Amino acid sequence: MGEAAIGSIAVREWRLPAADLLGLPRRACLRYGRRLPVLPACRVVKTGVAMRFNGLVPMLQTDDMKRTRDWYESVLGFRCVSEVDGWCRLVRDDVAIMFMHNDHLGPPHATATQYIYVDDVMAVWHSIRNRCRAEWGPEQMPYGMLEFAIKDPNGYLLSFGEPTTPAPTV
Image (cartoon, rainbow, N blue to C red):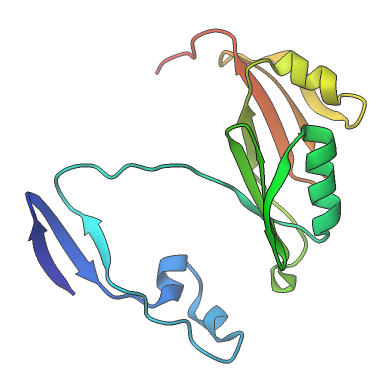
């Protein structure tokens, strides 16, 4: 571990096993009979200019890549922009979602909702309502969103929302 200054930004560097950076238990790294490599030094800004986050793309587990891809394309209008052995990236407008198939992760499951902001939630609902079932809505929510939710073939909850009023402030 070392510390250096880059311009006026103090930076701390250290080397960590890949498992630590990925949040994996060390025993998971031995699954294929070898340890994950030690990654190059990480740089963490302690002071100075804030780092910018550029996006968040969910990566979800699926048991059936073809069924998942076909459903997202035919029901929601996504297109597959990349697919490699057990992984794909689906995109529609400014929204992306990735799917993977890994036997050691078990069946698909999530307690989170994938929330998609749209320009016209009622138009989306009318375009898909005959091909899926609403988990709720469309309805006006107390936090200023008109929204509805559906489940994909893997059981993941997808909520679609459009702001209708300014969100309440705390």
